[in-house]
Amino acid sequence: MAKHERGLRFQPTGGTKAPQVPTGKKQRLTIERLANDGRGIAFVDGKTWFVAGSLAGEEVEARVLNAHGKIVEARTERVFTANPVRRPAPCAHFGRCGGCSLQHLPHNEQLALKQRMLAEQLTRVAGVEPDEWAAPLTGPEFAYRRRARVAVRWDAKAKRLDVGFRAASSQDIVGIDDCQVLVQALQPIMAQLPAMLRRFSKPQVLGHVELFSGSSTAVLLRHTAPLNEADLALLQTFCAEHEAQLWLHGEGEPQPFDPSQTLGYRLEQWDLQLAYRPGDFIQVNAAVNAAMIAQALDWLAPRADERILDLFCGLGNFALPLAKIAREVLAVEGVETMVERATGNAISNDLHNVTFVRADLSQPLAEASWAAKGFSAVLLDPPRDGAFEVVRKLSTLGAERLLYVSCNPATLARDTVELIKQGYRLKRAGILDMFPQTAHVEAMALFEASK
Image (cartoon, rainbow, N blue to C red; front, side, top):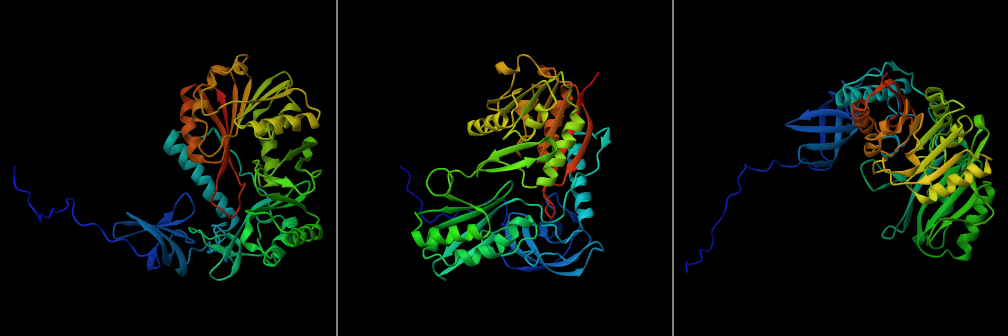
């Protein structure tokens, strides 16, 4: 047996590892352009910097938040040379709060940025442009958000309760008692919420708070242990002063403190009332949601003799207005509780020509029994990961028209490739400004079967 050699040193191949840029380091940068998330892009020493709060052409001083490999994430600390369109951010928390990343950009420029993001994805990924670009669908620039989650955390070391929103690129909580993007009905609640929670005798049990505004206003408290009588009374008094429902979320599902109370929102144009519970998906921007439904019905143009398919239907946000027009609507959702809720919404609105079914929409539709009869038109509103498996077989349903509502231009562009392969043509597209002051892009696209 060979003698074991000791003390051998093996040299790694591939050269030396480049040192990481330390967190907190300040760097002077020239911003080349904007990324799709609205951050500025700069290049230094072979590294790509993504700088929040900067605009194209600016010279800024940025502080490093995080660095990994050749990517550096940073935040603008100082602007030496400003882009002419830059405006003072209306919110005092801008740059620290992670909620609104584009307040330094005028609203018309925000819309132009989102339009470019959508166009670039469709051109680069799918190699297409629509026959017609629609004007951006917009609503109020501020005071639009009817639902919000407020972060709450007890700092045992400092003996302090932090209440606010998550910081940008961090789990830290930025203390906030005013938020300009909340609807007016929620702003007084937000203003007084931190002080009320800090009066709790056991703040350690607090999880988070959710605020809702619709047909009713509501405050939901997530708690990790039972509330004592004094803290519960404090909550009840607070909600009564703000004419808000109180919902509690301990073990199990959220429940209203008063079992007779329900949450919902109205679609006035269609005389519809939709009930929901905390945890259900609803669009947070009521004005743009209503405009979006109206535009979807206008583009899809359902007729009174048609059978329409609504995929990823949720609570029936599109399906119920469609049922006011079409002969029959079949609506499909992957979550059983949402199917039950949507069915209840149809019954309460006296609509009997719409059927809700549960199906796994990550799988192809061809084998589904409800798809056998075919449809004249299809509407789909998938989550961020899109509807790749669904769109691969859509042509087998015989639909002449297809309306795609997207919350992610990248997956819309990917799915557009599949639709074009199946003989559909992109007739019209445009952005939906569901989240002003952010770089989040929603879009609507109309496809028609080629003749």
